[in-house]
Image (cartoon, rainbow, N blue to C red):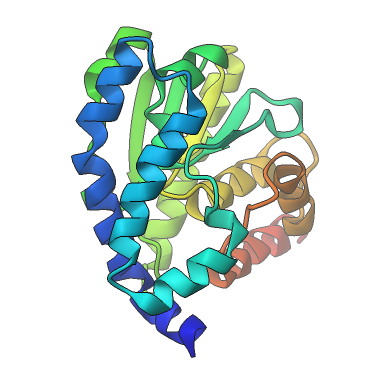
Length: 230
């Protein structure tokens, strides 16, 4: 029952979490700019505590999250994917200046809802990072055209970044679903020969075990695979 309630309430809870994270952004990003963002563990405590405060309003959601290891680390980034200069992360890591510097990130692709696109643009400007935002709603009602548009736009950005030798970071809110599906699409369409859904997901899970795109994304990616094999 708790899982059913969580699946029904997840879009609303996610939006609430996003607002809390955005509200706390100025504090975290100020520390980042001051060179205090390197302590990933302190970032864990800060964001995780705020997220849990929101989650406490939904007992069913909190119960599921406590058992779901995908959400146990709110400040994580994974890569490079299959040796490529591509990283996947959640929202918090994409705002962490130390992480961005450490991995020489020069391009950031954000695939989130409209109300999650607030970011410290000054931070990216200071670091010389090119940022793209492509709207992708995390629900089963998203129009297919919107999903493929976000995937294709991400694919084009990643192609340019690879061609120019610039490491790229793709992120969504949690770094397990939308960002993963976008990178899978890129891998499937790239010249690497990684053309199947299972192969693309395996490559990502090798560096990001929590990757877990929702069933609808997997079905659409399967359609891409079928089209490629015709």
